[in-house]
Structure formats: structure tokens, C-alpha cells
Length: 108
Image 1 (tube, rainbow, N blue to C red):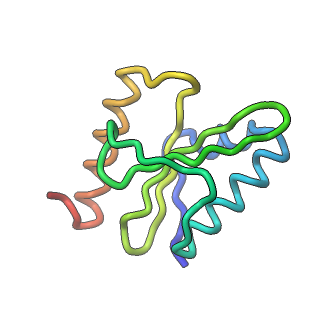
Image 2 (image 1 turned 30 degrees about the vertical axis):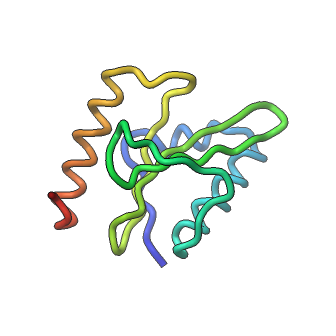
């Protein structure tokens, strides 16, 4: 099972989700830890290779969490801006992804 590491304030953001959304997000991340695909996901190629988004629907709205699970032993969870990516956030995520790839020995 892969370890989950929350980057930046991603864990605090998830803790602000409604109870139903937190539970569902946790379930989806648990599946990813075990090498399974979440139910509702899509690639986020604008950030980088292997970056994906989980979309969880709850009665009070839609919650999105982005992650990367291409590394052997760890799943990294990033923060997600609602509605639109702001260029500053995209650049932060790209830079963070490059740092992760270097630290995990998969930099191209």
C-alpha cells in the first residue's frame, strides 16, 4: 500500500469538505493507495504527466482533489482551486511536480 502525502494545505482543504464529501474522498484515496482507480477521475495534463483529479459529488456540491500516484511508494495530494486554475497555482503545481520527480528519481 502506498503512503499518502498531503502537500501544501491540501489536507486542511479536504478537512473543510462536508462530512459526506470527506468520507467519499477518503474512500477514493484509499483505492488509489491500493493501486485501484477512483470512480470519477480525469487526467490534468496541464499540470503534468500522471496528475489526476478526483471529483466527488455530495448533496451540498462537487468537491475536487488532485493527486499524483505514478511514484512507487507514495501518492501525493495537491490543493485544487475551485472553478478555474489560476496561472499562479498551475505554475506552483508544475514546479512542485518537478521537485517530486527529482526526489523520487523519475525526472525526465
